[in-house]
Image 1 (cartoon, rainbow, N blue to C red):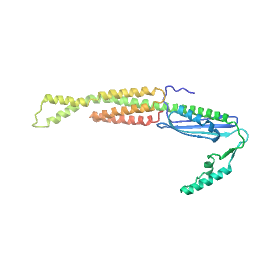
Image 2: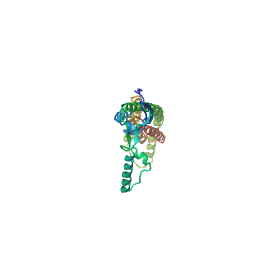
Image 3: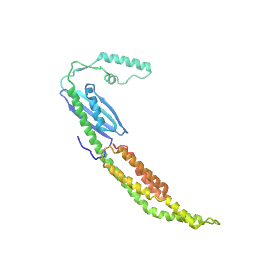
Amino acid sequence: MLNFATMLLSMTGFGKSEAESSDVRVTAELKSLNSKQLDLSLRVSAPLREAEVAIRQEIASRIVRGKVDAIISCETIAGESTSQLNVQALKAYRRQISEAAAELGIEEPSDWFAVLTRLPDSIKNQTQRDTSADAKAAEKACSEAIEHLIEFRATEGAKLEAFFREKIECIRQLLKDVEPLEKERVPKIRARLEEQLSRLSGVEFDKGRLEQELIFYIEKLDVAEEKLRLSAHLDYFLATLDEAPGQGKKLGFIAQEMGREINTLGSKSNHAGMQQIVVRMKDELEQIKEQVLNVL
């Protein structure tokens, strides 16, 4: 089993493997996409049902999260098959399904054979045989397919990590671009307010009190704390990328906090240039949020 102690894993993956017993060849095929929890759809061929519980447990313990479709099938490779179609059962099933469809007012299945052969007792064994070896082959094939799926997730995860680091660096650079605009912003705000006051003719005011109010107003527009917190969130996001797999939800929470600081920065900016930078920050962050949904 591969060790992915500190690696970003995607929830998108694919794995396939085969294993053989003396009589059958087992094929295990797994696909996964993103999901908030583990959403497992498992289909196991009837001769391998003995291994279904063990397979389900292993998938749940190793894949952890994602929408997973797993198909475990088998084919006979030695001698003639000891299984035969139970024609009488198939006839009875078809008659019952037709009657039920007519009573419920729904269409009959378009692929009768596929439907009927999935039903219990549609296939009967002429002779009894030990199926434990087949179950072990199914478990082996599934285990190897999971390994391949995790390798696929790791490859996709490496791409996601590179994407995140690039986007975080873009936001960090945009944050630096705010500084020169922030320095010119305060004198402009002050000059604009003083100009507007000078237009008020015949109005007397306390210049000392006015100065205090100007200072108070300008302090309310200070974004130093927002910049500091956003920078800390960027560092935390990058540090979380290096943690053990399973960072997806945590990265999502950090991205939400980054969004709050960027929004506050925009509401306080009161400067066209700064607001344009904030819009660009939001664009980079939205791209991060979209891809975080794919992280395990």
